[in-house]
Image (tube, rainbow, N blue to C red; front, top):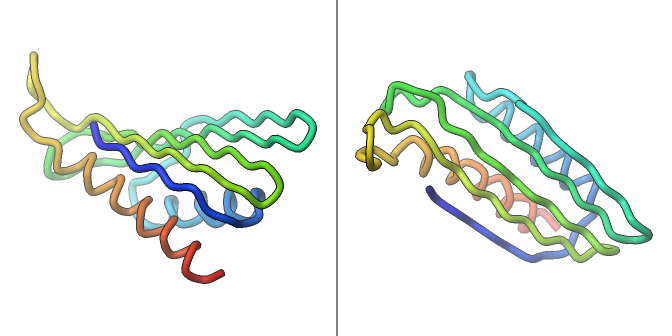
Length: 114
């Protein structure tokens, strides 16, 4: 399992669309699996789960993202997992780390374009 978190400024809806587009176009096998949105007063929360095929691990890896926004203050947490074919412990975590790294590049790219 690999994790990345960041807090930055931006527009919640704009960033969520940017992130979704970046992940789905960043890999030919990436798919949107499920999502959930919640709004209470000025607090926005979105949960997204993506999957993609990892040729190195020979299976699918998942990427779960939670985005929280209050006004233009955003917090994102991204966690990737899967791809190992071992029974009791993980042998190969390259695929999940690569999937997370793609998300990190997208997030950091959004932050620098502001």
